[in-house]
Image 1: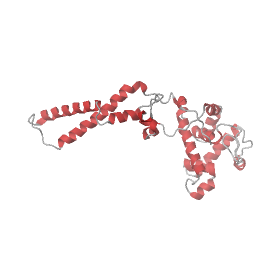
Image 2: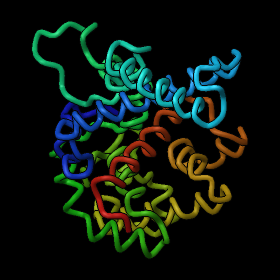
Image 3: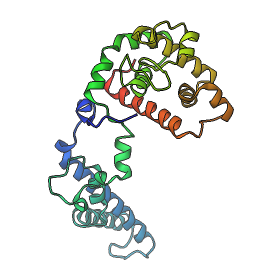
Image 4: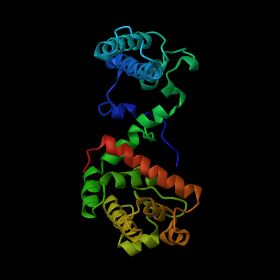
Length: 266
């Protein structure tokens, strides 16, 4: 399915606080980390050479040496040092780049490094229109999911992946409604009108719960079965090697992660 182009950051503004106000503290913490690291390296180096005899050994010489090493490490970190503090700061800097700034000047996270992936783990983009549609069924989703002991955000994720929150959606294969039930599946589940949000969500939740139980609680296999059919998953004994099914499972789980952030945990 096509991904909506709108950025989700406004939706998460209250969940993910900005770091700009803490810039000085963050820079200081990065420098402190490098100074501690340098101090440790200097200690290791000194341990490999004989004592200087400046203070005739003992506690006095150890303390004097420690103070020298500590101050040397702090001053090195404030200057160019090893560059560790600069690298840490670039990786943690979440500010948007200024217009016209070249790519080489951008912080590391904007260049697609692992730091960005760690901070924003595969969150998809959802338009405000889809969120608005989904919110119409908030209580229905929560109540029905709870009755089948399902996470409501998982059900929301399936709905967005399947129909983008459109109750009248119908696929070329004949799947219908919010959770895209096929006619045969609807009959088995007792769904008379698959375009009814109440019937469709109830049937979809019941079917999803059946699949989760059938595959021993393995959510990835249950979602794969929801997409490709339980017999197909059982035949392979694992996630089927179909691109559509694998992307489907990944998409649902990513949407669930998103909704866990913007919806209260139930």
